[in-house]
Image 1: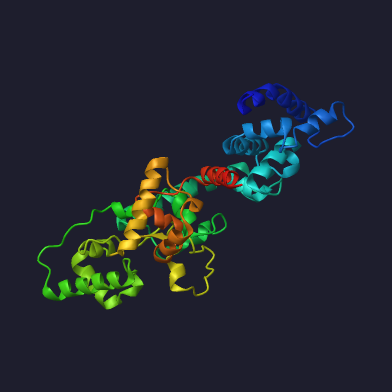
Image 2: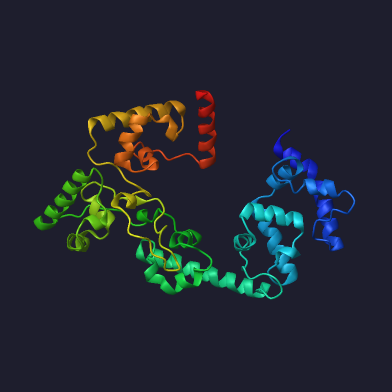
Length: 349
């Protein structure tokens, strides 16, 4: 029977149990009550009834339970104020109670001495306005703002988000910002600037990839920026795309933590970029991978790439996502990737 149909079968029984517990005011599990064993089965979320019902709840459903209780009580609910079965599901889904409260848009300060529902609503409205301010700043700049440009806003959110990347996500500012302003060819560049662009192009051939900003002196960048505008547009003059961080600002912490100095190769770890002037062997390897992906009608998972090919390409591309990026593909979703890897392991046995 389909998982959804199984869940439907148990719904009536589950909600009768929950409603009775809430009505009686007995929010904890009581081994002494009638049908205690039947009730307990719903808490075993790795099998049977419990698994069926737990799978039936989306993140939004579980968050709604918390929000509805907060509205009813007038403050953020403590664990003991939520029926125990709901509590089991919520903590399993979100890891712990504070994370669940944050996911539901509530404060971590729970219980009668915690934040009131009215205060939560006021804070939610303020957060909405601040995220709007962040979006408008991004539109004004034509790129995501850096944390130091909006320090007060970062300070406000540092107890809710870990990194500036998470905050940008919450504001709906994605990694497509580079397309907000189109790149264009600059006409009638003076000889000095043409030579500077040629220098950058030679640097790209030497590295086998587009250089990072920090690999070009600030003096050269500033001279070209006056005529070309953005770094992306500077690169566009020599038919290159800049290195693109998959999640920019992922290591920029709102609480001011600083990372230790890391190696140059590690700076590229979370990035994608097109190789510059790859050799014939590399080009042929990419052709083979593309042909195989076309036959499978999906991107290759790591174990489908021959070891010697993978070792050669990873040296140049730094990460698996960037190997696929060379043939205009993206990795599968993690769950799908795991399924395929599991099937491949079975076939190899």
